[in-house]
Length: 248
Length: 232
Image (cartoon, rainbow over all chains, first blue to last red):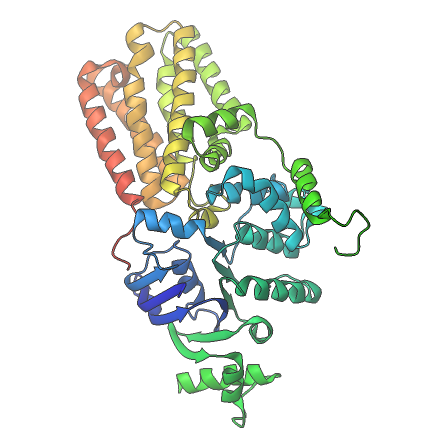
């Protein structure tokens, strides 16, 4: 298992953002669904080793992120796209991706080819030498995805990755996710149910810091059948039905 | 990328990747290459050359302040360089690394090159540059030897205070405010007690308190940037 969480809790003052989450995920694309404020981002930030848990057990790539050496090893094999990707306006696309490839401790000789491969995979070859300040929101998101995959990560964590992408880019992105999910674990946090239906092999639905559903997209769809739950698509109805049941 | 002309035994994708790698990526500058050798980490070297308070604009501003200090020293015979440099260095240290300063701070936190190393490397580089600038300006302004070197220890303490405050509050502005106000209070207190503005920089009796204070701030920085344990 690449991700193992046991009774993971994260508090911010009196607010409990993550309230005892247990989860295991192996290779594949894992969708993390939930309304705003459900705790998805906090959970993802803990998995990205950015935020330490208040309590509980967290093991990533069979290593303990609380140990300095193991944490470093996890980070070498990790790809992370935060919800708000900060960027250096004066950097070019390749400068930015190269910078994070170096910070990921990639062997310097491998970096140039890895950067080019990542840029090509997100379809930004024609913008490689453009400064980040000249790019659109969707392009910046793709730059963020490129830096996340530049080290060919075994664990890829993406927070709202399709925000700002046009439909064509979203289709290409889902294909990319499936490719990466064949070898590693991809955890995608989103509130877009259609992304989960199209790309994920497994899905967890979070509400108020807890996981209220864990199964396949097909099982989530089945939960909405015959319930009269709100939604335009079967998966959305499953999502609404589970949330309604959890809150009742 | 499959419908290309060319000899059948040539992997054009691989060739293109190699060519693009040569064309797209810039060669690191001399300073970055030297830093990579010294630090034995190209990632840390790149992080160092992107330090906000080591960028050209900041360095020019620092030099301009010290030149103004030199001019004021010549005109008034008050060692303004010695009084300015600790405050300027403290601001540089506070603005070396942190949330709000580094746009990609959140992302940097998940990197294999530890942010503590980035912080310490950047802080040391900023300190070193300010120390060299200050010494040159101080010597050029014709200050007494005690004053020329006397401000190095207080500067260390003020920088340590700025770094500790910025790290603890996770805010560069808090770091600057703490460093600046700490230094102003020290200088004014020195003047009130000893009757001269240079008392805070030239008094040998203050060296030990400054060093103890620096050590305490250093310990606070190390504690604040520690890796939380017990999560697995």
